[in-house]
Length: 339
Image (cartoon, rainbow, N blue to C red):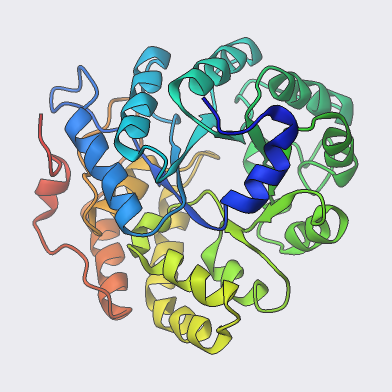
C-alpha cells in the first residue's frame, strides 16, 4: 500500500519524486503465453541502478489485467522502496480503469499516470472533468494529469488538449491530483509554462521530453521528468537531472549537446514509427535493450521495428559518445532472460 494518505498525496510527490521516471514494458516468455518474472526483475533492478526514482509499468501492450497486476507485483517485490511503481491507467473503459487502479494500489503502485480510452469521445470540458474525477475519486493514490494530443480532444474541446480550466477544477476538487505531465498542445512548450505559472505552487509539473526539460529547467524549476522512454539513455537522464537540481547548468548543457545526434535519430524514427496516434512500444523496448534492458518479444497485435530503425537508434547513441549494445539484432527479439 502507498506510504501516504490521500490528503498527503501532493506533499509526498513534492518530497519524493525528484528526478526521472522511466518506463518498464512487460516481458513475456518466448512462446508469449505468460509473463517473464526474471526479465521483469532484471529491468526493475537496472532502472534502480541507472538512478531512476520511479518506473511506469506500461499497460499499452497486449496483456490481460490479471497479468498486468502480477507484472506490477513483481516490480514492487524486486524494487521494495527503492523505486516508485507507477500505474499506467490506460485500459478500455472507465469501469475497467477504476478496477485496474484499485488493484494496482493493492499491488504496490504509489503513483498513477492518467490516460483516456480510445473510445472515450468527450464533447465538452465537463466530459473530461467527469471521467478524470471518477478515476481520482476511486483511488487513494497520487494522480498525474496528462494533457496530450494523443487523446484527440484538441479539435473539439480546446487546442491545449485539456484546458487549464478543467485542471483548475480537478486540483480544487481532488486532493490526490498531485502532478501534471504537461504536454498539452505538443510540440508547443506553452503547456508546461502555463501549468507552472498557474499550478506550480500546488502540484508538481513534469516535463517528460528531455530535449525540452534540459533547457527549460535552466529558466524555471522542474523537479520531475516523468514518464518517458528515458531508458534509451541509460543513466544519463538521472545524471542530468542532478546537474539541473544543483544549478550546474554548464554541465547539463554539455550533456544536452552531446546527446543531440541520438536525439535527432530518435526523432526521425518516431516520425516513421509512431503513426495512428499510438506510441510504438516495440521501439521503446528496443531502445531499452540497447542500454542493457531485457528486450524480448511482444504479443500481437503490436507495431513492429525493422533493421533501418534499429540501426538508426544504435548509431545515434554511438554518435553521442555512448556505448549501446552491439549484439546482433536477433538477440533483441529473444531477450536477455529467455523463458
